[in-house]
Image (cartoon, each protein chain N blue to C red):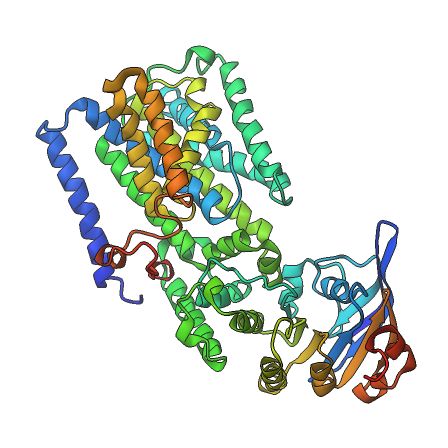
Length: 321
Length: 252
């Protein structure tokens, strides 16, 4: 663990680089057409959303139903910054993410002190309130949407941000702060009796999650070039929650896989016309029947698991970086 | 070191504990006994900040601690276990223990994100200390098991280890022998005595197993209907007519 360049780290770095090189090569060589390239980029953004939502829902155990609300704040603020204020792209999406954090702090402060469903209900309401407010602001186009956002989110940009998001969230989880979040999920009373300020760590998880949701929103705005309030409605929040549950609450690699699969699935099923509206939910129902804990449960994909494909083999990677 | 004065708590119209007094000295094992519903766990919950007492004071090492949040009371060096085991069941045995180090970590979220040398050093120390502690209780071979996969007796033990990892000077044990067979109870008695000497701490325990209570406690307080009806050495308690009537029964 002390050795940064141990075998495991190198394997991961190589894996990430190869994935990037292969995808980038295929895109450059036009093997992957621009339609699929768009979907790939979109799935990278969705991965950021799924992984960040998993931090608060899967790892800290606080049900958040307004993740799209934070995404919309990030999207609109960054679009304003880059288009109207002429700020550089990266700076504008960071400002969007920070504003999303501020909103998370404002909502979290009164609700995360309570136990029960208050947090879920408040975040749900927040997502809707944000949508209605944006709809009534003419500077950002109101219900017609915000057009003419410079398109800056390329495949490479999205890939870099996705990797950064995963590393940051993984590092948060594998730290004392992360263990505190997990202990709050497992048993709040016991955690508090062991010296954990549950409120503090719930806030921390929520704010970090909102930061990356805002970041993903900024990326999305500069990927689509056009955003409208309805792009971030309640259904979107539920979509992201589906990614988390599908992949497994408390599994980052599960979120990555689920976000990719569930972004592609509707597109791949497009050829089947209206039947895709049946097949997509059917896939979810089947998964919930046969693997109620999600694809990976709370395990992570690791070399151990791949070596011996026993589903309940103890994976030991949680404690290592 | 612990001095409880006139502690009372009211739930709605019910006075669950009234005018409870107790002192615990250094390196003392004190038992808290009484019939079910007498308010023993309520006293524990007030001492550890889960409930805020309606009246009375709790001073610990000269500081008033009543009304503090549970996590602040842990920082004042009081740790506890629970009547119904409350482990972090989906975490490994090692992680359960590591959680208790949280309130003493000296690195911030940024150190965690950027994996600074400070982070690495502290984490290595936490792992070393946790494993050391697990070794003392011969749980180190199971450190990578999920807590929920441990047998019952070891789960109880792990709860004690987790509490000790918070470096308390007063340890509160809520029915540590519940669900244990006589053989395990005897072992637990030895363990509790040994913990007291090894870690130089005081212990307050709730227990229904009279053999255990009478065997290891220096002092026993008896609660009935929220009131303390007796306090004294095991001998005095055994022969106290009020205690016999309320709790022990004839012939005990």
